[in-house]
Image (cartoon, rainbow, N blue to C red; front, side):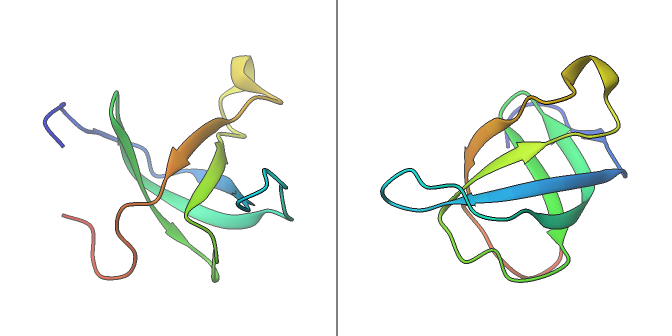
Length: 79
C-alpha cells in the first residue's frame, strides 16, 4: 500500500459476499493495520469469498456499518 498504515490490533468481523451479492455469516478476524486504501487482518477461519464486508465493532461511531473490500492476498504473514 502506498498510504501510511496505522496499527489496528482489534477484533474485526468479515462478512463474505458471493457473486450474487448474498452475505454470509461473519468470520472473526484480528486487525493488524489499516490505511485509507486497505485493511490487513488475520481471519480465524476460511473466508471463502473474494469480497467481504469488514465491520469494526470496537469503533462505536461505526456500529452497524461495514466497508466492502476485495481480498487481494490470502495467507502468509503481513508485510
